[in-house]
Amino acid sequence: MLPLDGMPNVPVLKDLIQLDTKTLIRFGGGALLKAVFGNYWGIFNEYGIPILLVDNVISLKYTNSAHISQAPIESGSFVSYNKVAEPYKATVQLSKGSGGTLMRGAFLAQIEALAKSTLKFHIITPDYVYANACITGYDTLREAHDGAQLIKVNLHLEEVREVIVQYETEEVKNPDDAKPKDGGEKQPQDASNLVIT
Image (tube, rainbow, N blue to C red; front, side, top):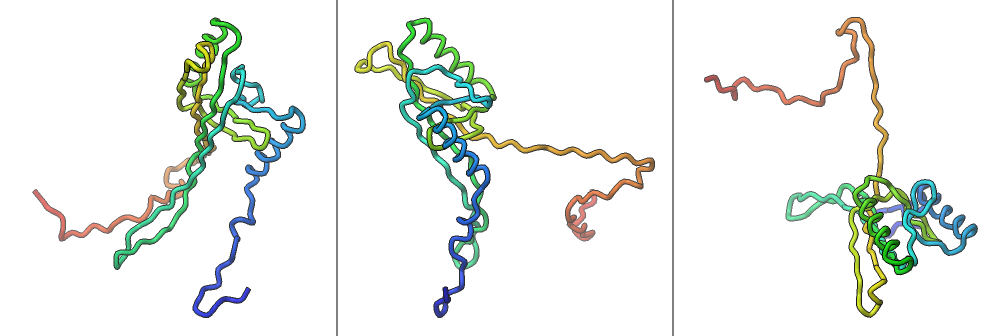
């Protein structure tokens, strides 16, 4: 493609060509689960076991966004210089109406316990697997037109990205033999600005 007069030659769709391997795994995981189990929806632990025995998964709302950093520059303009992905957020609406009072009470107690935990879960749909999410909150709803026995629960989840911290130790006989540490650039001390009291 030839550049137009006065227009810079910008590579088109460069970033879209490179696919993230995690995205491919999540897509492939969803396709594999659909092939083996059919159209299955739910919230599962890291071993693939459903965490809640619900009657239905009613809906899934998924939000994925990023933040672009900007700074003001001369002449009332600005510059954009970085794009940072934010953790995805999802709301899964579940329903429970069967099993009697005891089972519905156990269902609500289990949600309460899971909401207080720091465990990570996977949201599995027939099309895609949303991995590594933690429950950040929930709300319940009972409506007269649905019947007093039917409980609807909205579970709010947010992605957790873990990093591996690497610690290193250095053994030296003489402290002067240790490798120098980069402490960053230091501002020079100007003796004329020192105040002596």
